[in-house]
Amino acid sequence: MKEIDGAPESNFIRDIIKDDLANDRTGGKVATRFPPEPNGYLHIGHAKSICLNFGLASEFEGTCNLRFDDTNPSKENQEYIDSIIEDVHWLGFDWGDRQFFASDYFDQLYEWALELIRKGLAYVDDLSAEEIRKYRGTLKEPGKPSPYRDRTVEENLDLFQKMRDGEFPDGAKVLRAKIDMASPNMNMRDPAMYRIVRASHHRTGDKWCIYPMYDWAHGQSDSMEHITHSLCTLEFENHRPLYDWFLDHIDAPSRPHQYEFARLNLTFTVLSKRKLLQLVEDKHVEAWDDPRMPTISGLRRRGYTPESIRKFCDRIGVSKRESTVDVALLEHAIRDDLNTKAPRVMGVLNPLKIVLTNYPEDQEEKFNAPHYPDDPPAMGSRDIPFCREIYIEQDDFMEDPPKKFFRLAPGREVRLRWAYVIKCQDVVKDDAGNVVEVHCTYDPETKGGNTPDGRRIKGTIHWVSACHAFDAQVRLYDRLFLKKAPGAKGRDFIGDLNPDSLKVMDDCKLEPCLSKAEPGQHYQFERLGYFFVDPKISSDTKPVFNRTVPLRDSWAKLVRSGKAD
Ligand code: ATP
Ligand code: MG
Image 1 (cartoon, rainbow, N blue to C red):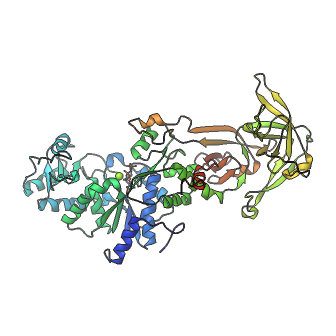
Image 2 (image 1 turned 30 degrees about the vertical axis):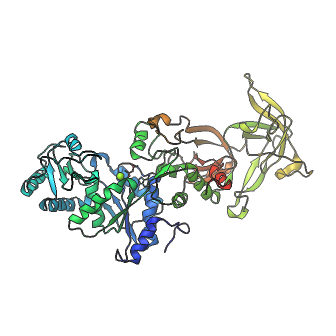
Image 3 (image 1 turned 90 degrees about the vertical axis):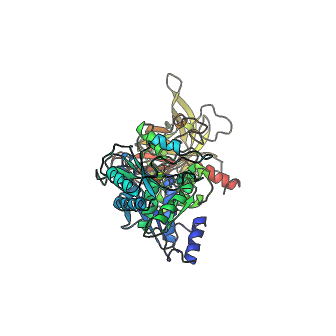
């Protein structure tokens, strides 16, 4: 058994597969598929399904196909196909030459529809969509048969051919399976198999004006690909009898089985492609890959790694019970991963100038500091230049601080990370009374931040040399939604958007080694978080740093307190 990222947690689907193999129900084979509809970009929920399908295939030395479920041409396009391919590859999975499209099977599906008509198990219905809904009945009342239900086989064959030939307008007729209008399962009350839609398909062009419904396409596609375990989310549980009925009534090349698991829901996040599309189209975000989006491409631009997403999917597990995962767990996964990967550096986001009045005007010196203080050889080190003027974070100075403020304040001392202890002597204010500059003295005896006389300095702050600082744009992200369950209790989810989810900081001062930062690199800015050089908007000379996540880890805190595991 192959394992990705450590030992897999057990789950009920793995148990089913083991049992099937032990009892030789699938000829010793495990074949899964990931079947996205190319009508949007993939999101973190899809990652759960991808990790599950590809993960199980690899664990049992089977195969996993990538199959585009492209049966609804009016909403699908090539851009989505390309992004899906890129995202699944980026997550670390490969399907070799097993890339398929449901549209590849349109001819075969049509043949099987003819087979059902000939067996008296499908008919052409002239009722309108509205009438079909009325005739279907309710959960309490059985449906009524359509007046067209008992058409002869010849008539049905003739009408279905004419549907295909474009002789009827859109919506004028449908082909329905003839099952049971009184079934307690509404999906079995003569479900539609084909509808007439004049829409150009991104692969088949104008060859077809009838398109198969999801239920009619899915199981048959599984069968053609010799899928053994067809995994889908719980909302398809009530479709399983139909999945089975279709396969039992055609001459199917293989007999796959469907299993359902609970979809991923995340707090403070929407995971519906329809809603994500609305965010893009109505310009609440820049694009599908906006770093605030829960899409794979958005998470990638934000600075998430494939390892962190796979680890997250592994930790949340797979079950049959609907639940909502705390988004802090996802944030925990990326911190955990970057902790050992991201070099430590210093950057000041809201600069406040400090002048060291006793430091010689033309003097400069350098401090060599490791990129990874806990294990200095791991990532090497860099020289940090120092001079008479430096920047610190505005937040790290208070003119009138409370007692427990251990950073810089009039008359107080603070340690500059890797450099010296400084003491605040004076402030310079503008006409409005804002502090614009702080005058300090440095203690030459404290080189490297040590205090040979043993006096205690409680606060250590980050800083950047004003003479050497590198100017860059930094983008800070907050949750896209203010509410734990956006759009709950009948609210419009748009109303729950966080108006301050993006803060663009144009006046940031970074230590000079960052001028060599390349798109796609990760850093930890000490005390501020993990940052990622945005590959889309950075140029060679002007990197843009996205904050992937701040350092404070509320999930780790919950774990320590025993409230989470
Ligand atoms: P959405 O509801 O977001 O529009 P979808 O189910 O219509 O998604 P598909 O492209 O059909 O999107 O999904 C491809 C596969 O990914 C399906 O097998 C689906 O069950 C699975 N999937 C989609 N969303 C989630 C989720 N939140 N958690 C787990 N699996 C998901
Ligand atoms: Mg779907």
